[in-house]
Amino acid sequence: MLQRVLDSARTLTAARYGVMTLLDDGSGVGHRLTPGFTSADAEQLWLTPDR
Picture 1 (cartoon, helix red, strand yellow):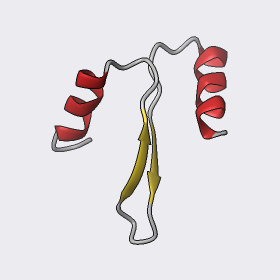
Picture 2 (picture 1 turned 180 degrees about the horizontal axis):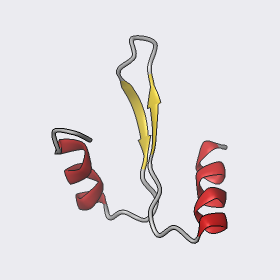
Picture 3 (picture 1 turned 135 degrees about the vertical axis):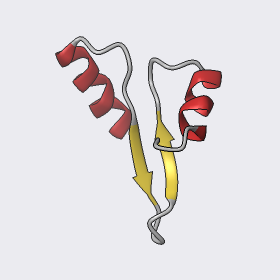
């Protein structure tokens, strides 16, 4: 469902990329959605210090 929300937001704003970070119970990253990014680019995004 969240993927569809993110895709709709990208369409509405004509955005090429979208990012959504879902936190787990311990406030750590539980899941990431990165439509528009290649898998290599998405991985690089999460390796940058200021994410």
